[in-house]
Length: 149
Image (cartoon, rainbow, N blue to C red; front, top):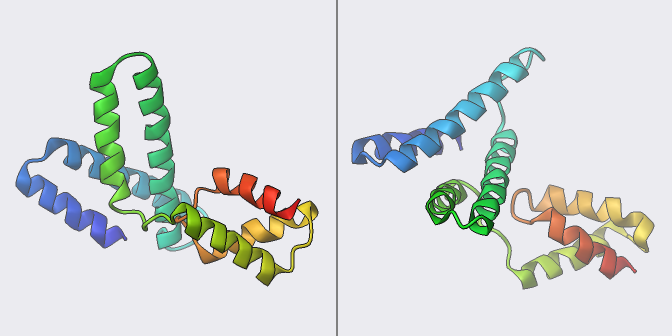
C-alpha cells in the first residue's frame, strides 16, 4: 500500500495535479508520523493494516468536514473535501454493498456461534478480521445488534 501511495504521488507530481499531490503528501506525512511513533516501541515500519487505518481515519475526518461545510453553505470548501475523499478512497479496498454486509453479518454470527446481544463483540471481531476496511462498523454494529435480538 505504501508503494501505491508513493507511485500515485509521483504520477500526480508529473501531471501537476495540485489537489492530488497535496492529498497524497498528507497521507505520506501521516504514515511517517506513525512510523516514528512505532519506532519508539522498537518495531518496524507501519504495516498495511495500520496504513489502511490511517487512510480510513483521514476519509472520516474529511467526511465530517464535508458535512460541516455543506451545512454552512460553503460549497467551495465542501468541493475540496469531496475531491480529497475521492482521492483517498482510491487507496482503500472496495466497500461491501448493503446485501454483502448483511450476508457477512449472518456468516459471522454463524461462525462465531453468537446467540444473543451479549455475543455482539464476538461478531464484530469476526467481521473486523474477515473484512478489514471494507465495512463501516458504525453502521454494521446496529445491524448486528438487530440480528442478534
